[in-house]
Image (cartoon, rainbow, N blue to C red):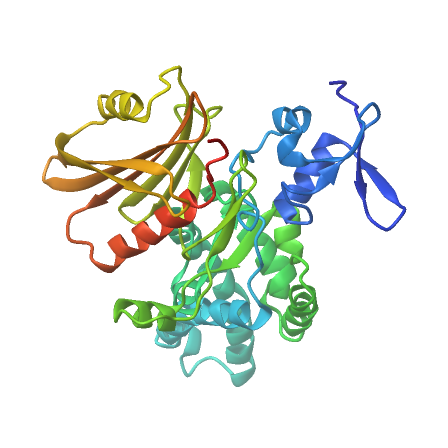
Length: 382
């Protein structure tokens, strides 16, 4: 592909706009387009989705071979949760720090006039938000959230879903102090917050997120966590994942992450995870021609102690073999379930569920995720 090759995206009924690959990647990061957005270039017979266009995928620098539609280009967090999360994080630092400043006699002693004390107070209230933002950097780098964001169900990630480095978080928080809090100056801060509220309310990124290509996304808040810990439904929806091979879409439970297998990023293998549970979906083209032979060959590749197998059928009536293993890594004992089924004369799919023993509700959720993934792989041959 020519490095200056232009790609066209439809922006109206009859209007197409041209972009370079760098422009497409920036819009992917912002969430303005998704992997399912059709693109076209000179020489193509008809437009094709980005995930079907190897020329575009191979030129992208980011990790977009995830097969996701709603993640990482999912919905943004609403304005008011972001505002209150920010206020909580600021107050957790500003209130105790200001209380300690008041106790310093050199700053608020009787020898200071009231006017001097007011100037010291205004200076402190301008600089203490910067201190709070600097303290926030290592917390965000390690966890992707802060106390305020955790309580209100928000997380901060790159547009491709990965965590942000401490250096980029420092740049982002300095921009928040300057453009979001107006350097902590009275009235200027209120004006900056109001302007950014308008951006978020209309689905646009804030000034600092637009520059640094980051996204604040909604996750489970404290209320959702309490309900789910009690075994009740919180009413939260999951996210849609499209199988890039079959094009079928399955809805997965909330808070599950996804990545291609790092050891084989070009293979048809996708890894889904939540806490200690991992579900792997993969496809192999092997000249075995027999489901039992494939199950035996796959079983030889599984680490762990073999516990048995069973044969059943999928929802569409096609045969499926389940293999059961036990894997011990140090003191952690995990249950491994492998499902294998055939979708062509030499085409097989496998689904692996790895979970530590005794997880209860999370184990049931993993099984529902596995069923949803399996439903994206229908049998297309007889």
